[in-house]
Image 1 (cartoon, one colour):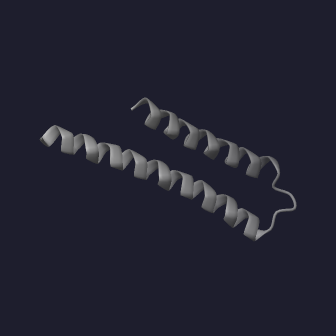
Image 2 (cartoon, rainbow, N blue to C red; image 1 turned 135 degrees about the vertical axis):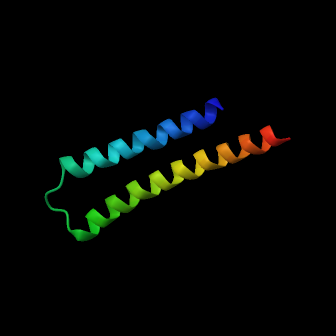
Length: 65
């Protein structure tokens, strides 16, 4: 479980770094760059949610046995 928590923490740190970079350097960015940043952020959120759901499902199955 510790490895999963570390992975989730890394995903959240990457989201923070991505958001900070997008806000610190907004000049010279076009709509494509904005869409890319938003897509990456959403992708990291989706990956985190998938991991959380997989762990919850696994725990639920283990509990039912």
